[in-house]
Length: 440
Image (tube, rainbow, N blue to C red; front, side):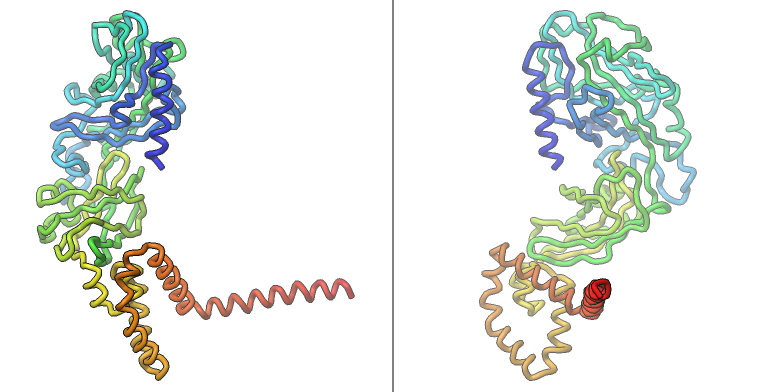
């Protein structure tokens, strides 16, 4: 969904950019919408595509900047350095309000149709309604320039110097603040830093919402866990849960250590401890849910994988990492042999609670009657011949799963269905009786 939304937005931007009739600042369609940060290394920041072309302060592009916080005080028994909770590998330094070195790099497209246009960044102080100039990007004008494949860096200190409430990050944990920034052209060189500008006058620019936070999630606040790891063909399925929700949730990710056994050394610690062990985050971002399942595909059958789960917010801060569990993908032939429920195993392609239920039903019910034993005998005569054929056809597999779920529901909730049927019949009868009474 997000991919198609982003594509449509970029098409709209491109139509404006290449029209060549106005001088504009826009998001860079070549880079897409990927805002980079640079501290000790360059990494991708959390971001959200705008609902339009970001030319309005009511529909800005959004950037999420991870900030450093105070020294460890709230949870002295566990690591509380914010950088250790940042989910990108190798990031050891985050931003501060006084940081005049490290930058946020904005992907902009400059379309200067005439001469002597200068690029500026301004920021709006939340205590007032004014935008103040925070940076001029070059003393050299952009003359008739169309500028692709470039990012424009701004330090957090440059922004914070123009704000009266860009405070508390260094002293108060869990601080989160939001500001509007505006990138624009002016024909004037050397606009004073801190001077007030009006976006309705300095038109043609682009708005970003700058979100800044040092809120992290130690084990004392959120504890993720894995309740089950099931095997499938070239995949494992992980059932996870958490005792609390993160704020500004973005996704659930799986940390895969591969065949390296972390030995529990990383359990309930920040994610940078896991990077120090081995492996990395899975490429798939699963939609955020406090309880759910995550499937890791394209694994090698027969190779054990040690996995943990983490929860991420928009700032790309991760919760502590769950204790690891291991899972070993198995070839479909091995699963068929292990489960002995050929058609269901072919349909699900993994160990599954529905298969376990019907395996128990076979042993506890069918095998205790003559007709049941005959049915099981015929089943095992025929099913193995067709299991692999079924596994190769997704439509048949889906039909088998649907039928299995339906039977599972009926067998487990037959009393509920029976009671519901009685209530429905009673309701219909009462309506008819009421009509008869009114007629008489």
